[in-house]
Length: 110
Length: 114
Image 1 (cartoon, rainbow over the protein chains, first blue to last red):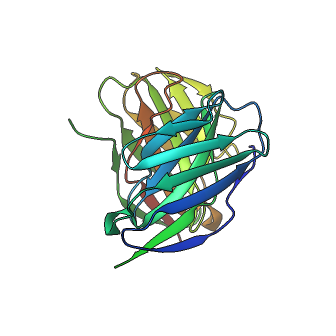
Image 2: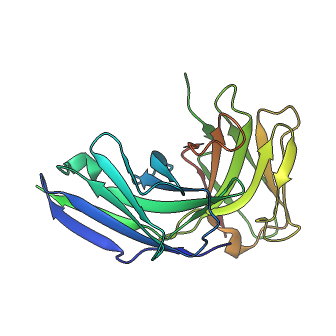
């Protein structure tokens, strides 16, 4: 599969602060990039996706940015809450297969 | 309105045994995926189905692994002659249609081969 990696394995933020989770990808041919959240003992949960021809997409408290020049993807979470604590994966969609990175663990400190 | 259901939630088996892992996707979802997740890693693609047929099984590690979806709904992942290296969480996901990026995952089956 293609390589999808993350810059930081663990990120600690204060409750109420904004969080930024980064991801590098290698396959320029991917149609979509997706962010998933995985809580302990659960399966990954879809957060947001972005099509490869877009630079930015916003959801509820989340924003995904795509920089195709440097093959970089980021997830911004506004006003981080304790419930946001989880492992976050970026994934790329290539011919309907999702290739996941190894994840970033987000710790939200009260 | 149930989500993706996987059974069993945990399975312990002896090396060399045969196991079957079951996935009940969300009703109406035509695409079904199997992934394997090792501790501290992201999910690794195994196979996906569009309807009854395996559209892509390129992620299956070897011929000990096989999956079926005979009626286009429930899927079974079958592992023959299990090895300790097969120990992992096996995740199933479904999506509404082919090409839909929003996949819904089950909680997984934790397989331990002893």
